[in-house]
Length: 235
Image 1 (cartoon, rainbow, N blue to C red):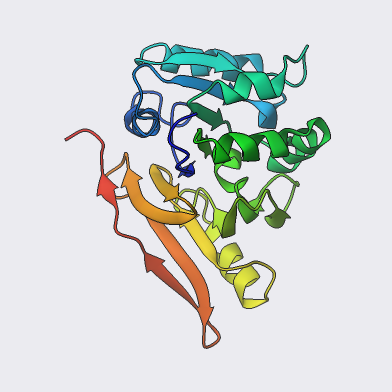
Image 2: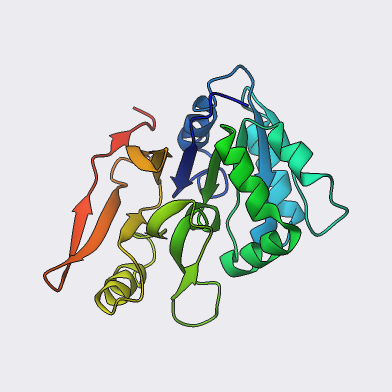
């Protein structure tokens, strides 16, 4: 499948957050570099919510692609066969902890690794953004934000909704200072990190002021580096 270039796009936006702004979703489809790419939606983090699946088809039926979806809470097809036929796998938001538990029980983590190695573009929003990293900052548990071990396809950590949820920045700083999370990335709503073979190659944004950041502790202080961002939204 594809040219075996391993790509992951961690999204801070997309059809479920920006239904009138297709910039990030179209960017993801473009990375497949094939006419009418096949794109499969994984809505596991919402328990395969019907409304979320309908929203996906409503959005992607407008694009030059072939949409499909994979359910794990109804009768489930042969996952490996379905996913290896795709050009893009797009993971939705929701409860990351529950999503990963279900995936691991189904053996889906190993299948996703295989698709990634085969050149399928992996992408996702919120839960679907942080799941690819070693760790993510999540609100899966009620109350304070927490650190969650994820799939570790990418090194480091990730925090979405960095500009829209005021508790995110101080939580990330605190986790870093206490050694509870590895250095990593934060994503504003409307920004996206594009990785190729494990490295960030581009940051794009569907909103003029959206950014992504690299965070680490240097000499006991959290250093937050804004990454160069390319605005791809409407002129």
